[in-house]
Length: 149
Image (cartoon, rainbow, N blue to C red; front, side):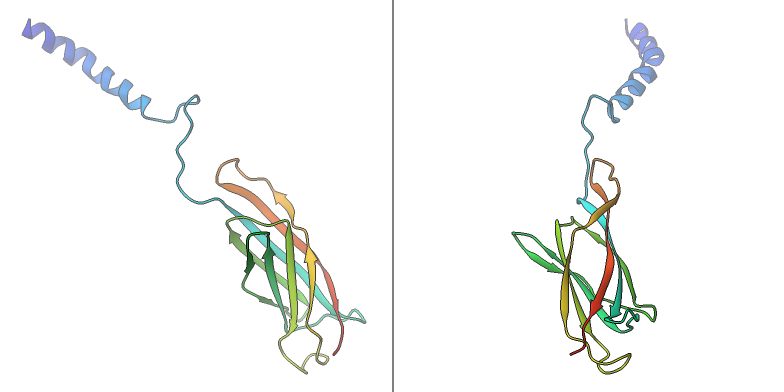
């Protein structure tokens, strides 16, 4: 009897262990276990000009996420010589309303001193998520005309 049991185990044992290994993997009917945090990519592409349409260099562009529960200020971006402020962030989520604050960081250089101002944007989804933790890519873009103080 022992010999028969040993022989059966030596023949069917590897197959049994292999089958058990496959059942521990993701199967289509079993929900997948995920670890991590929900996130999305958020991009800013804004041009800042004076009232005449000339690009302004040295303007601090500060995106602020506004929701009913909280207000989160993101790291500011400074405009380059062409007046462009481009940046990207990885966030937990994007709100429906994003206020961007514009401040003259260089003072009297680059065309004078400009008054602090803000503008509201609605982010546009530019890339779909994976229906799991990654919710896609959102972008705000536009042009802001600043007034002198």
